[in-house]
Structure formats: structure tokens, C-alpha cells
Length: 337
Image (cartoon, rainbow, N blue to C red; front, side, top):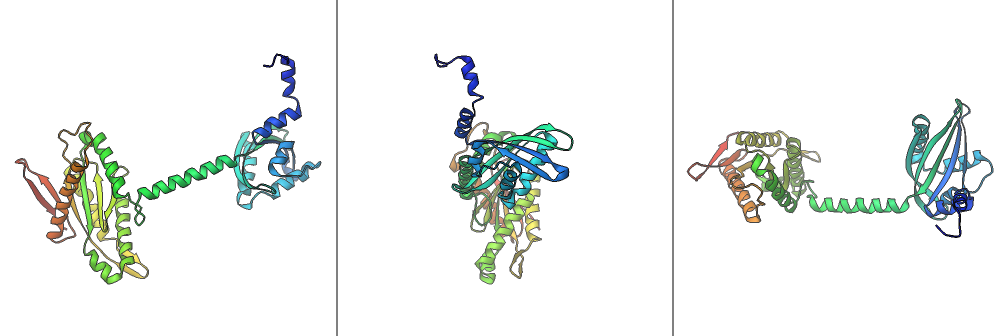
């Protein structure tokens, strides 16, 4: 506190319109009061100096004219939201809304508007509130949304929306480190049968439709914590977070049957297709708290890929699984369709 000013003088500043307006101007904020006469469908509005500056409105001695000029310049796309905000203030005593505003000099700005019910007189109401220019905040929001969108695009395959192989590897490593010892897991590899023939017969764009359909089938069958990716070309990879072989096989068969019963649609063509699936369990011995390295993960994928090769070799459109034997020798078993 300045030694030259008393407490009384400081207190007086808060009642000085010039000082208050400067403080509000520094915060890009203006104050208003609306009086509503619902039965007469009449609305009156008065705003202080900073509100009129903020919105680029002319000073009008008639409150009804001020309200009209404000209301008629609200974008039609946001008018219902603003009206609803006023109604919520009357019923709930407080509400806020944000909307764009075309300033006659500054162009488009973004406004946050909030108000509180200060008087309920039965057939008419008094509301006091504020307008604040939050254009800088809105710009930061949009920049953040754009950055997140770009990050999401970089992390997901453009054709299918599934994870990219790189992100899948990262999340697979994280999941195995945190959960493998407690839950166990299986790796699933899937490949579209006779995909080259589909491309040769229907064209590569139709082939893309088949790839998207497989991704849709995966999403329809997988649970929230099942990781999946487009591994490359017409191959897909899934982490099934269960150590129970029967459950993993049941999941693989549900995916296979859904693909078998869900033909791709491209323009006026219906394109049936099948997939083959390879499964491999993730060994849990010594897994507690250890993050698997890249070679270990690649070895897991090689096991699932061997099972996938066996599914292709023995007739396609089936699930095959690589099972480690008690004697240390892995054996292959297939579920016949």
C-alpha cells in the first residue's frame, strides 16, 4: 500500500467508475444488466462502458435498443444456446455460455458470457452478468486440438483407424511390463486369405474396403483393453489380455467368424472374404516388473506368425495356435472351421 493513501482512499477506488472500467478493460471484461418481462416478451439491457467497447456496440440510452442490437448480432448458429443460457439463469440462478461474436473493427472474437439472477419479482426478473473476450484462450484451445489431432493421426493407421505398428509395439511393451505377470496374454496375428486375388479381381481400392472391414470386425469383437494394430498390408496384430488358452481361442474364433459373415461392400459390389489366424501365448516366467526388449517382442510375434503360417498351410480360414510342451518342444494345434 502506498504510504500516501489511506484505507478509506483505497476503498473509494472500488467505487470510482473510471478505476473500475480500467480494471475491467485490463481483463477484457464488460458488465451488463438485463431486465426480463416474459409476459410482455420485453427485454431491456444496459451495459457499462467496457461491455460496449468489447462488443463494438454503440451507446444507447434506451435499454430496449441496447438489448435488440446485442441480440440481433448473435450468430444464428448460437442464438438458441444464448437464449437457453438466459433461461437457465432464471431457473438455476447462474449459467454461462460461450459464442463467437463479429466485432465491427476486430472481426471475429470469442465471448464467454455469464450471469446471475439478482431479482425475482414474480412477473419480471433482473439478471446481472459479464462478457469476457476469451479469443486468446479459444485460439490456444484450437491449437491444442489441432496438435492432438495430428498426434492421433500419426499414431493411427489412416486406412483403418487402428494403431500403427510403432505405437502398438510401445503400448504392447507397457502392457506386458505392468500386467503380464498377473494376467497372462496371447498374441494374435491375422491375415486376409487370397488377398492378392481380391485385388486382382476387384481392384486395389476394393481391397482397401476389405482391409477396413477387417478392422471394423476387430473393433466389434475386441474389448476396451485389447490392443490392436494394422501390422502391415493385409496383416493385423492383437494383444489378447488373458492367459487362458480357451478364452484366447474363443476370441480368435469370434473374430474369424465375424469376418467370414461380414462381406466388404464396395460401390455396388459385395466382396466376401476370409481370414486366417495364428495365436501364441506370452510366457510369464520371470516377467514380474521387467520391460521386454524389442527382440523379445519380435520373438513373440514370430511365434504367432508361425501359427498363422500353419493356418494358411493347412487350408486357411482357421485359427492355429503354437503351444509350448512340457518337454520344451512347441507344438501346433488348429481349430478346424
